[in-house]
Length: 130
Image (cartoon, rainbow, N blue to C red; front, side, top):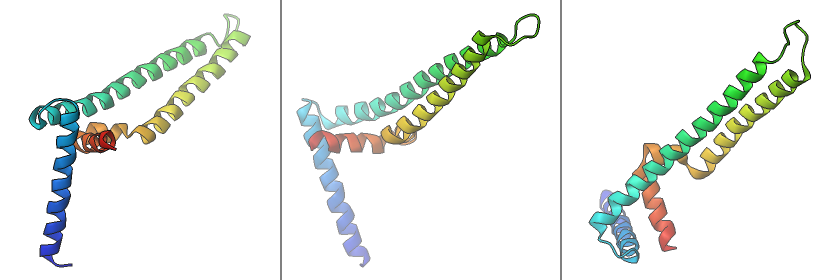
């Protein structure tokens, strides 16, 4: 493939993308100049909202775990059932939250929305048109 054909393919693809964005903007009764920055900011906000929200959930689970470790023994040094249950439940909560965070992040491309919101916005525009 020579450089001329490659350039034509890129131009054709760029024109299709412009048409998709224009169609999506028309569906929302907006101009492209107003529509595109809003979609890009929306993707970035979605990514950061997820990360902050899930970080708070993990923080709460960690606080629960730390408090459970503090109640692990009574004053005489004996293990308490409440303390053992709290530690087990705390570890389960923390690791479940981490596992859920990783699986949701992979599925929804949260990191991609934060690092490259334009790409995520383009994917959403194409999904809106289909």
